[in-house]
Image 1 (cartoon, rainbow, N blue to C red):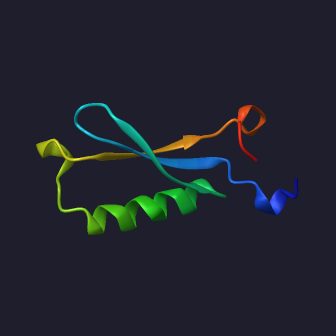
Image 2: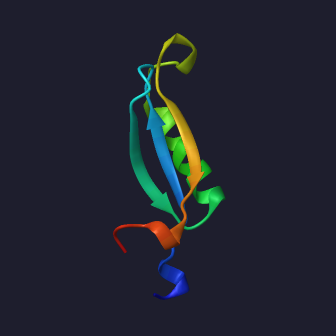
Image 3: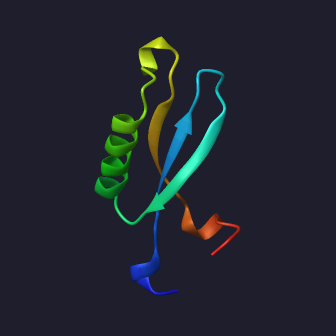
Length: 67
């Protein structure tokens, strides 16, 4: 696999019930943070009022089921 295709950061949306949804993969943590900023701008729900929370998580590329 080419290093330019590695995307070791994922953005996860977690709702008030604890359900988690992967939003996307990013090449850098900074890129993932920018994605979260864009998502928050388009999301009208406030996390303090039970709206979704967005998280950046590092992915262990050695354990990914899909390339």
